[in-house]
Every structure is written in C-alpha cells, then in structure tokens.
Amino acid sequence: MVASLPTGRRAGRPFDPPAGLAELRERRPLSRLGYPDGHEGWLVTSHALVREVLADRRFSARAELQHMPVPGMPEPWPAEPGVFGSMDPPEHTRYRRLLAGRFTVRRMRLLTERIEEATGERLAAMERQGPPVDLVGALAQPVPARLICELLGVPYDDRERFQRHTLDLFRLGASPEETAAAYTTVHEYVRELVAAKRAAPTDDLLSDLLGSDLTDEELVNIGFVLLGAGLDTTANMLALGAFALLEHPGQAEALRDGDLADDAVEELLRYLSVIPFTVRTALEDVELHGERIRAGETVTVSIPAANRDPARFADPDLLDLTRASGGHVAFGHGVHQCLGQQLARVELRVALPALFRRFPTLRLAAPAGRVPLRTDMIIYGVHRLPVAWGD
Amino acid sequence: MRVGVDTGACVGSGQCAFLAPEVFDQREEDGVVELLREEPPEDRRQAVLRAARSCPTHAIRVTEP
Image (cartoon, rainbow over all chains, first blue to last red; front, side, top):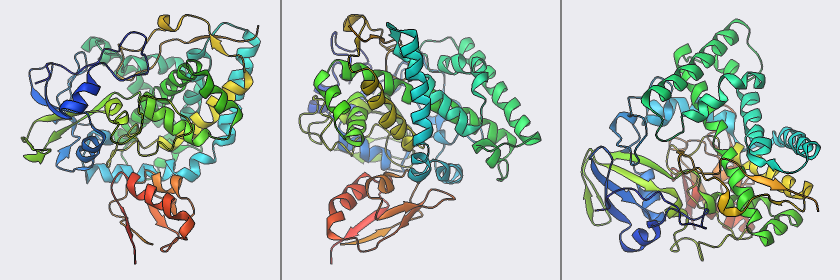
C-alpha cells in the first residue's frame, strides 16, 4: 500500500514527475493507494495501464463517486447540468457532440493568424517594457486567456471579474469558503454574460449555443467549465515549456532554427505533463493486471508517470524535440480526452517558437532553483518566470 | 490497407485529423470523424497506424487485405 500519492518534486528536477513514481511504475504499476479521506483505492503509473483504465467504460468519471488523492481539494458533488467532464455516456455524449464541432483541428488551425497576432502584441509589449520580465504575466497567461475569451465571446476587458477567481479554483488547500466564493463570483459573471447574449447575441460560441436545446443553466455551466479550462492549462504549458527550453539551450536553438514545431509541442506536452492525475471509480468489480478492483474503489492515474514510461518512450527522461512522441496521454485518453487539445496545440506551436525567435538571447533572470513552482496548485507549472535578454 | 471508423464511438478529439489529415476529417456540426479515404495510399500507412493507435475511443479499425 502506498500511503499517499507522491507529489513532491526532487530538488533541481522541476520537470521530472514527483519523486517515487518511477520506482512504483517499475515495481508495481497498479498499487493500492491511501486517500486523504481514508479511502483505500488504487494508483496506476504505467502508460499501458493508464490508457486501459481511461478507455474502459466500467471506470466512471461521475464526480460524486470519486475520492480525491490529494488533500485540500473540494469535496466532489454530483455534476451540475452541463458539467460534462464529470459525467459518463450517454449524458456526457450529448454535450460533447454539441461542443466538439467547435474545437476541430480545422477550426483551431484557422485561429493560427489570430494567435500570431496576440502573441506578437505581447512580445512587443515585453520589448517595450525591457528586461527583466515575468513571462507568466507577460505572455503565458494573456495569450490563451485572450483566445478563450474571443472564442467563447467573453469580453477580455472583463477579466478582472473572473481571471483571478478562476485561478483560485485550482489552488490546493483553499478553504471551502474561499473556493465557494471564487466559484460564485465566476458563476455569477457567466450567468450575467449568458443573459446579455440572450438579449443581444454576438458572433461566438456561447451565442451560437443559444440556438441549441440547452437550458440557460446548462449554458452557464458549460461557459464556466470552458473558461476555466482555457485560462489555466495552456498558460502553464507555455510558461513551464519556456522554462524547460531555457534549461535545455540546445533544444531551444533547434526550435528557433528548425521546422519542428509540431513534434516539439508533442514532446513538451509529454515531457512536462502539467495535469498531474485524473481519477475514475469502478462501477463494478474489474480484473486488471492480476488484481481485482472492487466496485466503488477509486483509481488515480498518473499522467506524468505514464508519459515517462520507458516501455513506451525510449530514454523517456530526455527532452528531445525531434522525437515522434505522439501517443502521450497529456490530454488524457478515452471519451473525456481534452476537448480543447487542438486549440492548445496551435497556441503552443505559435507562441513558443515566436518567443525564442523574437528574443534569441532569452535567459532566466533568476537562478533556476529560485523559480517558484506550482506545487500548491492542481495544475503544475511555475508561478512566475523571470526572464531577460540582450547583453 | 483498409480503414473503418466507428462514428458512434468517436468523441471528436481530432487526433486522426491532426495526424493524418489526408485520410481523416471531422464533421462541422459535431466534430465526429469523417473518413476521406477507405483505402489510403501506402505512403500514409504510418500516419494512419499512428492515428488508429492514438484514437482515445479506439474508433479506427485498420485491416490488411
């Protein structure tokens, strides 16, 4: 039995999975795991088993069935109408089908120019400001925030009303009162927005969905989920990705000079795995890897451990932007695989090379060991990334 | 090689259209897979196999005659 989910990163190894996961994967890729609420569930650490669990419909994503593997996360409650990530098919399928057409490869590629523009504006602002600059606030947060706002039809100038509060929702150890307050604030904002679109529709995703058979309650919850998902995911990949590239100058150079942005993005997604885990609960007894998982037991799957599995990726702890690292599970697997993954891909493919081309001498403006890591957040990354350039 | 898709299982993640756009596309309305070529040319073999392996709901079937 593993007493608790490993979450601590080894000193000087900010990009590697939490210490202890590699040993578990090798010794016992399906282990018993103790949960903070006293539940005795499971932990899965190999690439093959993670995929198996996430693709198996006997493992449910229903929120109210889950036990959370780290302390400080809100108590799960049954999904509100529209919160499709916490539902199983067929309820989930209806929402997914309504939304997937809005996030296709083709549609997201059409945003390339707009992302280039938004990135260019931020890079120009950095240049005007001059070094040192915090890359999180200057580039990593605003570019994805602006894009998800434009896509949904959320006025970017309103961001004071939801951005900080949304980030609060992803903070481990926030008190239930803080979480509830943040939730209410963002929710109230989206509710007003949906009402305004009802009165005067605009050309965006939320307005388009007014024409579907969704209730306003469903629409508000969907808007809330998509806004949250768009604000704090790619932002962390961008900042942590830039940090990793600064610590691997040869790789940064290859990205700047070469034409390997697609492979580079997949490799960074694999190598950095900013979503640390996801959970499922068995709906019935399931035989897996020689063990019996009983109905009601929660299985935590470790995304970073799976993405560094040597059985799937040769030399997995090496960052190599030229490798074909497709097949990673950074976006999950199964019916809940990330809805916005094609948007994330285009954002990363545009913003990272643009950053290193605009500032060929980009470097950390603080010792690497002093960069504040997001070990207190559900999604991993860096709180700030001080950078400088020039002589 | 011969390719088949299960549109009922597809969740529109776009992995296939991303990896092998000459063979797979997505429907505008719901993102579900659209098979462009049931018998893709030999030079698309690796891309198609990668797409099939990456599909999150295992909705792509590849058979060899």
